[in-house]
View 1 (tube, helix red, strand yellow):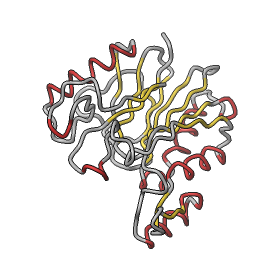
View 2: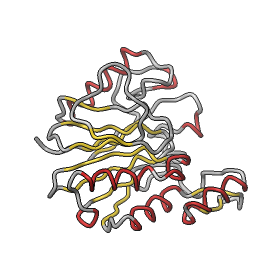
View 3: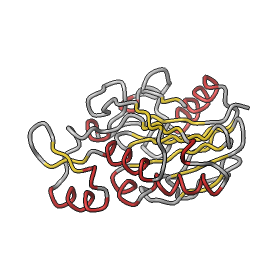
Length: 228
């Protein structure tokens, strides 16, 4: 498992420099070079990128998609050496692995995906491939924290109605969502005991991309793979 940051690539302007997102307005050649450079640094020959749509659909994959990827927010594989990438810039990248079964997965869990249950859906799909939630290791990556992620009160109440642990307030006392707490609770309810965190807040960390902080910006990624 690994998380990138915004440094060490070739993108210019607001995407500087290691932007891995292909749908944010950056030069496609720069994105391709950044993706290739990152894969090489991680020792990966192939990487699966999704067309993330803030949903709860997940799929089993054995190779990168040809042409435009399908609309997905979670992928899993049992093929060694195949990297799975989750692009984010405030949403939470959630990486899962059962090393005994040889199954790994990644989910893009922003506010809509967390509300829709993309992470529990990924756990269920991995279990259908022989993984056991009790053996899984989960890593919740950098995301907007519950003290920064301000939302309207009615939205907070709606999301917390589905995932109570997301209810939060900002430092200024305004309504907020804590996606990390909500996802951790979803994982616990799904039977995943080992939940780890890269607790950096994207809004507060200049070395990471943040849509809320910058609006026009790039995407960093969480990567998970089985060693070949």
